[in-house]
Length: 210
Image (tube, rainbow, N blue to C red; front, side, top):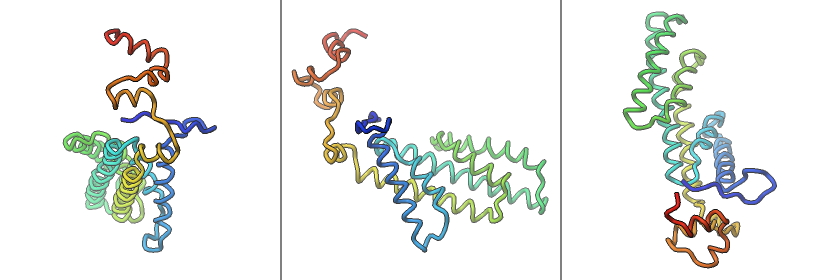
């Protein structure tokens, strides 16, 4: 994973990833302004935020966790909601307690089984909303939540793909850190040694010192 690269702006923590995240959120909200979508962009924007990583690998991992967890939690929540109302058309709160326990266990097992352990949190959110918040149109809610999350994650991946760190560094005239240059080149030049911090210089002079 790449390190956070500050733009030396007056706002602490503002870096390349921050700019890409904000851009992904804006593009997602802009897409939902098209009449074809006609619904709130909140969950899509959340998906874009979760899907933005420092590089493509991290974006795929974090975005995939969000998307997969939402799908698993949505389908489990729909199945349990259907089972509850099959026996109690008006709903039964006390029945939801063991259903929530069972659904959470199944969701965790599936996320671990498919190697998406980070999907437990977003999946649990969708599961609990469907069971306890009981949206008026629970099927539409679950499906829209899955689709919106997927759209947000895809937009974040596209932004990260089109705006890699190397391209942004050229646009903003940023110079990679001396450590990153040494890692890429595998060697150290006198200029790099001069730019390195005293701790880095000492570590380079004593490579066996741990």
